[in-house]
Amino acid sequence: MDAETRAEILGATNRALCEHGYAGLTVQRIADESSVTSAAIHYHFDTKEELLNAFLDDRIERFESKLSCGASDPGKRLDAVLDAVFNPEDPDVDGFPVALMELKAQAPYHELFRERFLDLDDVMRGTVADIVRDGVETGVFDETDPAEIARLVTTMSNGAHARAVALGEHPAETRRVVEDALELHLGWTPGSEVDE
Image 1 (tube, helix red, strand yellow):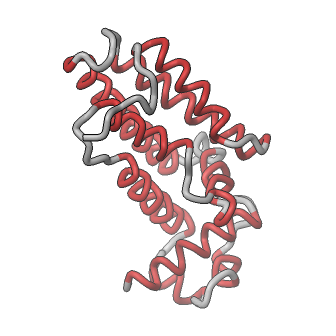
Image 2 (image 1 turned 90 degrees about the vertical axis):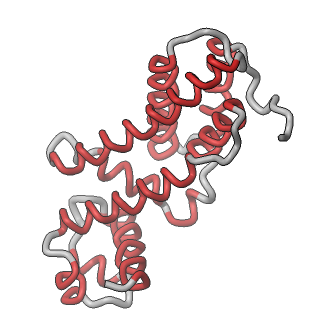
């Protein structure tokens, strides 16, 4: 399938999930949100679960690309992670946080979704742990357990997502709390890096 058709179908899936929720999601509703027919969607994706897995793959790839930062300074790299998590480009425009929450709610019942969210968790935790490990080794951060800091940041980012969707709280509120915790645990003030 060409990239344009794939993007159209995945965008329509996002909109349909936001409007109808997982329980009300059908291929016809996805087609109604796009210029692609339901027959064409079925041609490219055998099942709704296969389509939703492709949707999650796409979003995980986008998130992974946001986590990567060309800076060598661990502080700048950690700031980039915080930006990716807590400063989404425009979450209200496409409603993606709602769509993601709909799929997270299905993870206890769908092994495939649970696996995808475990993959996302592993990427996030691995990225943060590597940054913290580098920061400790170079003296940028105080001595600490990188895996525990990664768990803290990942848990708080998941909490921020739930609070944003369920309570309408802006992610910047949680980012402030995360930065305070990182300053306490790492001896590092977010945003204090000197440009390279």
